[in-house]
Amino acid sequence: MGIIDYNSPLRVLVSVKGHPFARDAFSEMFDSFEGIAHTLVEQPATQDLLRPEVVDRWDAIVFYDMPGIDFSEQPPRLVPPPQQLKDDFQALLESGKGLVFLHHAIAGWPLWPEYGDVIGGRFFYLPAQCRGQQVLDSGYRHDVNHRATVLDESHPVTAGVEQEFDLNDELYHYRVFDREVTPLLRSDYEFERDNFYSATKAVTGTMYSNEGWYPPTGSSLLGWSRRCVNSPVVYLQPGDGPATFANESYRRLVNNAIHWVAGAHDS
Image 1 (tube, rainbow, N blue to C red):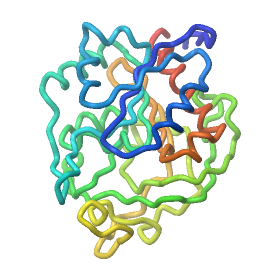
Image 2 (image 1 turned 45 degrees about the vertical axis):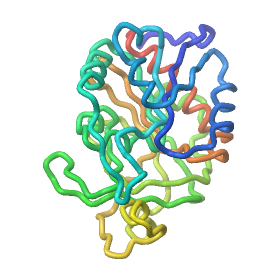
Image 3 (image 1 turned 90 degrees about the horizontal axis):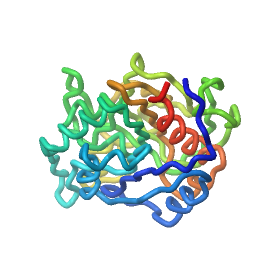
Image 4 (image 1 turned 180 degrees about the vertical axis):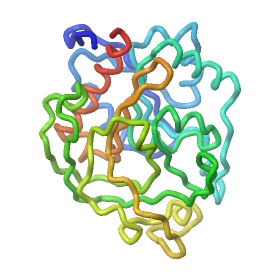
């Protein structure tokens, strides 16, 4: 691992759109990061900036977006990624570009299985095929008071973060590819069916319902790191709204994650 120089400003592309969010509070969090110059870009414009001839202007890329799902219809229409984007993304991974995925980004491009492989997990709004198995839609629960615990205090992403800290945030009942990630953060919440609502119900007109939805116990992991091809990758599940964006432990996690993925490929 190379030494990360926090005094050198990093150029960071932050991709958004596809899911409502508190833009001002989100942007203020990034404004608070010393040594990071960020540029917010909305999908689908992000896709043009991932091309090999322009992506080198960024030291790291943060995804807080959710492309590939058209919510103007019920149920939502799933949209496949353009082949050009798939080719560009593969080139990005081969180049070792650092990637950070936040919160709902884990639901992006549901018709692109390899995209979930990059992140290390999946949130599905509709029942889907996942790695050769038919799986149910994922679950959600808003405004959950829970405690996060750091699992790997030696990792640069968790450096300086309290070993335990409280959050009020949305939680996901989702699929995590446990054997392929390095766990960084876990919640003390109980990830049982009765504590969550069906995502399919939500996008087909019935919020806050789990009637007829019977998934197995979900993963309590809130964050992890991994390497995909040559790229260092971090996923952090928290990040639904202003309370989390203002949380000092969460801010440090995001800041650390950006610096780590920007420097890890030099090691």
